[in-house]
Every structure is written in structure tokens, then in C-alpha cells.
Image (cartoon, rainbow over all chains, first blue to last red; front, side):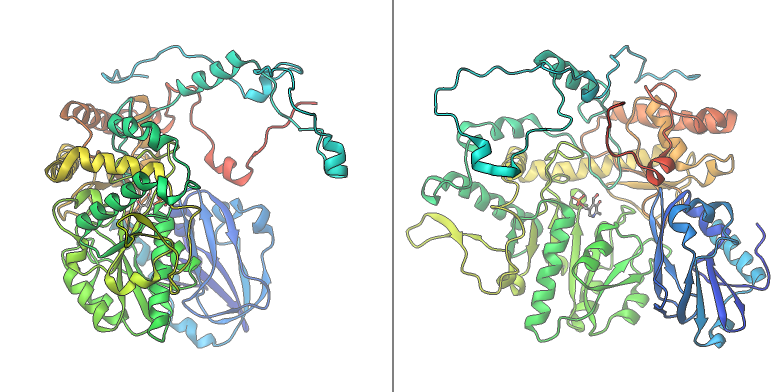
Length: 129
Length: 496
Ligand SMILES: Cc1ncc(COP(=O)(O)O)c(C=O)c1O
């Protein structure tokens, strides 16, 4: 499993990539692998305020419904509408199939998240549990 | 199928399509006598809203209907055919004595609109069942209205909210352990509470430190399943109750697993304030398509004013009746008085067993689950080594090395003549195999199950593809669950 560098990762298995004051959010390969085939993705509307660590949507797989946790606070400026009709994109290309773009409120929050290398170590431990 | 099994074998049964496909115009399964009352002019009565075209109603003969459903019934798996080890669901045998009692004429033909005066027997059934359930749970008062476990949870939390409101603060949050059944957080959300997740410790129990840290005056209640979904008894239950009560919170117990406790310990004695029971699990009424369910909610005295109305009472003249005059009630939660037919069956079960019989049931359920645990330990990975009660949760960790997951093993189990166990739940065990035999199973049936599970584990080592492609002996092989969820076909349409 290779996690792209230049992104930050959460313990709840989301990734966030920033450019300027915009953050792009999705879920990791480990997340999609443990969820199994994803059949539905529920995302917030443009304009919604996300709070770091709080839920902002859900992913439903054939096994379970799981919450999505915001890696950082901010306002939703764009939603990946494609996932409404093609949720399988999250399984096929988790690090490409972004979910929401947000205008970051406090970019410093990202310092608390994991790097790709740290995240890889984190999932290795979790999978070994 | 490579391996032979002692339990299942192939057997010819009939193909059968949809009943719509059998239809041809003009066929009917009924014949009415000539009209002997004045005909009603429906068009004049209903004007433009009269419906003439009934759409696609199947037109078939009586024997076609009978054969249709009889053929379908031979494709079924049921508790009357064999072990149904679906963990968390308590798929126990539905004793025939329950059915005999439910068919007694006065009971079967009773109607909820009968006046109280001629419903005294039915009211006595409600009262006696209530008393039995209160004795078993050690609680103070009960409503029988809710129609399922989840409905009971909702009714219970409505009472929790009403109680806190009466104390001047409805509070904001419900704490729920990460091992909980999905209905718990769903219920809290329905009742407009925020859900806060509570982590389990390495033994699979509530982490007392985490509970202490998360408990405050915003928390309305903790929803706890005991024994929890890992089959583990929460040994710190008294302490948990104290932590909640010290800050004014309530302890809600999901009693879906009461099958492990009846006749041994009483939730009312270990600090529970509100709990629901699943009559369709613990008290042997049918479920899983045979329902309906029933989820009575038992409470402590402090919550009594909030019970759904009406409540059965003994009137001054000694007869039984319904009390509707309950101003603080959360209201009615179900038409009439709940699923009455289930009360009859549950009471029959309780009275046929008696106190010692019920205690024996509990002991046998726990013994059976531990027999299976011993039989499969080592063959399947046991993520929590804490002693378990009425069910046992393994994981697919050993088999996953060969690419075989819990769902594949479950599908292969069908070839061996068993209903699958519960897969992928509880969520804190990745790749869970959750097995609950209940007290109904004999040692012989469980030995067949253990043998089947061991045989599948061997197949995983020698020939994983057989397991990955299972089931092989059913009328349809592996179904595409993903396609069914992504592109569901919910309606039959005639081919033009
Ligand atoms: C632990 C637990 N709680 C609640 C429920 C919900 O009960 P019901 O299906 O009757 O709504 C279940 C059902 O499986 C359960 O196992």
C-alpha cells in the first residue's frame, strides 16, 4: 500500500491535501479496503461548515455505514457530485476520488495530523491488532 | 462440492418464477355466489376517482397459488430444519406450546375494540406477562407496546428525555460503546440526541477511565448492551451505573442479550434505569420473517409517569382496565396495545418453563456457546480471550492470509447445510464471525456445525477457491450484493 506524500492523514482514515487555503478531502486505500464495496456516499452541501474531528457525511458499503470525519475545519466550496452516481470510484481510486473541497479556517490544525509514513505505520499496527 | 457433509445433501425441488409470470387473463381462485343485496353504483359514489384498472394483479388458480408458495417454502432454511447460529439474533426454537395457546379460540378471535368488560382474559394476559417480565428484570414498571427492539429503544429514550425535561434539562448526548448494535446510535439520533462514541478496553468491556472522562451533565444516558455484543458480561456494571448516576445520567440497557441472564441476575439490581427486552429473541416468539416482533420497555419508578399510554390497571371494582389519564406520558407508540399475539406466546413460554426451566435455558445457552468456542478455538482466531456467555465472536484473521474472508466462510457454510452466522458485526472486530447457538441445539447438531467449520478451515488451506466461489449446492450461486445495492431492481415489470 502506498500513501501519497504531500498529504496529511487522520486516525479515522481520511486524507487531506492542501493548496493555498483550500483543502481537498477523501478516504484512504486502507479505509476503502476495510469497508468493502461502497454503494453510497452522502456528502454535505456547498456552504456547510465543517469542524475538525466532527462528522461531515457517511459512506455506506455492503457491510456497514461509516461516518466521515473532517480532518480540518472550514467551509465546503465544492462537492464531488460524480460520487453520487459512481460510488465505486472510491474503491477503484481512493486517493484520486476526492469527496469535498473546503476553504480552510485554520491551516495550523493540519500540524496535528499524520504524514504518509506515520499513517502507514499506524495502519500496519491497526491491521495487526 | 468436494467434501461430503453428514448434514446436507442435494435434493430435487421445483423451479418457480414470480407469481406475476404465471398470470393469464380471466383465471381466478374464487367464485362468488349471486349478489343478494342491492348493487352499489360505485361510479356514481366515487365519481372520477373510481379505479378500474388494478394494474398488474396476478390472475391465477387456487392450486397455482398453493403450489407457488409451497414450492418457495421448500427453498427456505428455518430453525425447524436446523441450527441457525446467527449471532446477536437469538434464533431459538419457537415451541409449539406457544402456538397451541395462541390458537385457543377466545384468544385468537379477541378484538381490540371489544369492551373491557369482555376482554378481561386478554387484559389478564397483559398484566401477568408484565409481572413476569418485571420479576425477571428486577424493574418497577413496564410498557408492552413497542413492536421491536429498536422501537423499544426509541420508546425508552423518549422516556429518558421526558424524565430529564421534568428535571429542568433535557441534556444533549447519549454515550454509546463502539461494540454497540447499530440500532443504538440510530435510536439516539431519531430522538434528537447527539451520539458520543465510547471506546472499549482490551478485554472488550467499557473503558472505565474513558467513561469517567466523557461523563458530564450534558449526558442524558449511556446505552449499554449487557452482555455486550462480544458476548462478554460488563463486570464493572455497578461502577458504570454509579459513574452515570453521580452526574444525574441514566443507564439504558439494551436487553437484546437477556438470554444470557434470565434467572441468574436482574438488571434492576445492578443499576439499570431503563431497558428493553426482545420477546422475539429471549422469549421464543418467531422472528426473521416469522414476526412480528415485540420490544417491551421496563423502567425504574422515577420514569413511571412517562410510560406510553394506556397502562393496564386494576380498577376499584377489582376488574382490569386501561388508564388513559396519564398527563406526563410520552404518548401512544403503537396502535392498540402492541403485538398481542406475541404476548400470548411469550407468556406461554415463561409459564411452560417456570423459574427453574428458564434458569436452565440460560445455563444451556451459555454452555452451548462455550462448547462451540472450545471446538473452534485455534481453528479460528479469537480476538478477545475474556470468557464469553451466550455467543462467541471469532475473526477471519487466519483465513484472510489466504484471501478468504468471513463472508466467504459464511457462504460456504450454506453448502454444509447450516444457516450462516452473523458476519462483519460487531464492528470492533474486523472480519467478525459471530456465533450464537442458543439453548435449542443438541450436542449432536453442534458437533456437525463444528465439524463443518473445521472442514471449511481445511478447505481454505488446501483449496481456497472452493470457499471463495461458494455456495455451490444452492439454486443460485454467489449473488452480487454490490450490484443489488448500487442498482436495485425493486419492481417486476411485464416484458412488453
Ligand atoms: C444487541 C441488539 N440490540 C438491538 C437490536 C434491535 O432489535 P430489533 O431487530 O427487534 O429492532 C438487536 C437486533 O438484532 C440486537 O442484536
